[in-house]
Image (cartoon, rainbow, N blue to C red; front, side):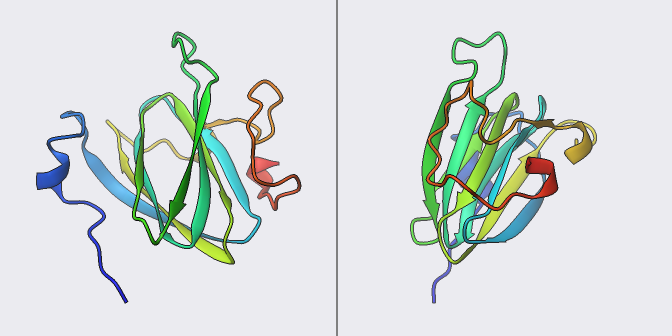
Length: 146
């Protein structure tokens, strides 16, 4: 087995924006070929990682005033490497499960009340303007992501 710390305030205080106030964590378990996203809002910071399995993580800048508006980047997140990605407000993210199953972890920071699914941005995973290169062509999608 193994053990690792996913968050230690004394370590992160030196590398994260000072205004971040992490309020809660979420975990999502999905099986192979599931694609979740793209979701986000304009006030939530997300620190994401893969607790079990392997994920293809995509982050897209949806800030209209940004020089990188609609640009995306991808990351491989695995439970063997313990990488984390910090996603600022105004970005959406999604992931594709490459392993038999995976557990996705997000640590959320925001001011005020949490913005839940009904008020978040949802961008189609296959939006033709974004031209995201997903490692799949026919993923399993939840209703929200279709």
